[in-house]
Image 1 (spheres, rainbow, N blue to C red):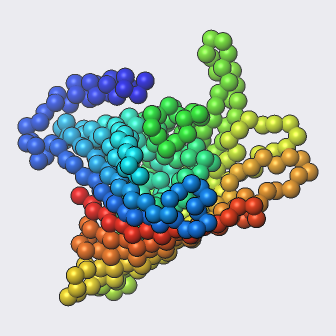
Image 2 (image 1 turned 180 degrees about the horizontal axis):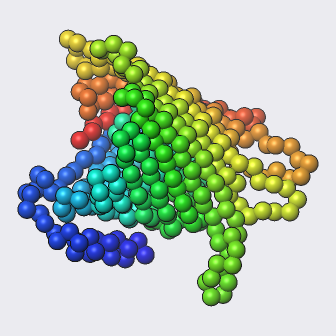
Length: 357
């Protein structure tokens, strides 16, 4: 299904655009992305997960973009990763984007659902080795990540609006493929040059079908809510304050059961750091950053029962040493703690290098 959809969209776009490549390769094709490699050292309490004490890993994300004419371009995003002698290569993004008018564009194919900054921020600009831990949880992956769909984007001065419809059938996606993505919307306001505020909603569900494949009712549905704020404030000519805060709520994503009630999951994180520009140094700048995260997964509460102790706290700390604005050495740590006494927390450390291109 994925490849058939991609072929249909590509052929239609080529026909519409007339395949005009007269601008030359520099104006027609583009390649960008990032590469990172790191040594990861697992804490003593983490060895129970079957990991070795220290492991080497590498990762590459490359986007290939081809402009068909002034208003249409296509993009393919590939991911390569290697760890402990294993490797994996996948095509993650494949979409076409067309400008309808200067303020409005439409995108179709497989790409990220417009829900959650933790999912959608560029991987080459993260101030830690990993994204916020919530992107690895089942609850929130039902709403965010990659999927096949169509999305409208409008940009009206400082206000951006995204509306998307997704079918839940993406191949190699972060988004859960056992649910049908129905709708996602995001409102973004660039209040000042250094402040962005955004809020979004995503509705998902699984329909109940009869023998003819006709939807008879909604077997279950759930709603996710997300809000975030981004700050990049110039403290001085050589120092910028960075702050990010996000709250996410994941609706209970299973059918209703007699004898109890599903409880929504929620998560929030706050990130703070200062990027200090350096003069007469082999480093362009240095940026220490810390991120605190609290995750409360969804759960099913039996009538009269007691809420489980399922909370998770994650603290990330990292010092980014920029050799150039696009070359970064990262020295960091991640501490994970569980509310339940039956689960042991752990602290891992890493030394990595990342280059954007």
